[in-house]
Length: 270
Image (cartoon, rainbow, N blue to C red; front, side):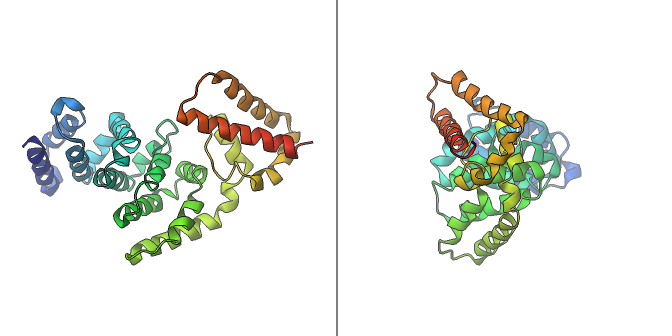
């Protein structure tokens, strides 16, 4: 009953004119974000938030409340991988928010990794509505420099190519994938640049991407004639030492990436 009431109220607020919202919309949004205290199901919360962020004033309030993005991050790495409707609601919420440039710093936040987590959802679902909304989100974020960095680190070009090799009933998906392919393909050199690798190492964000490939190291090794760049290799070694006794799945991936870098460095740098 509470889920139904909350969902109905979100639809009513969305239908109202902005000037009539007053404090009611803000209070309701804060109540939804309170956590488990309101006893709403995750499916209901994700649907309600999708309706509320369509109201510009509430989208601004949502962005100002970091806990909203923390909630999205926790859903992306948890329940979104178990329920496709919740996954759709959450990614659609991000898509709506991505129309506001004031939300982009959160999408570029390395502590949240929203773009990377969103791409992982595609490993769990092949439904057209999921693929469509992910493409729409990437379309909105691709022109933001920090978000483009994240898209490069998840190898968005490779993701798009894999999706293009699947049959789609919805032609809009094919058109979106073609647009994304052309954009990422045109920016491939930027994605593979040494500066991208340096930024990832500096931020200690190690994940499989185009800057951790044999092709990258075949040309990148010449940059290590500069002592400043050699220090970054030491930073990778120090990261392994600092986390030697830790074996979480996330850390294992990071260690594997670093070990690959070290192997390629030893292979190509005399």
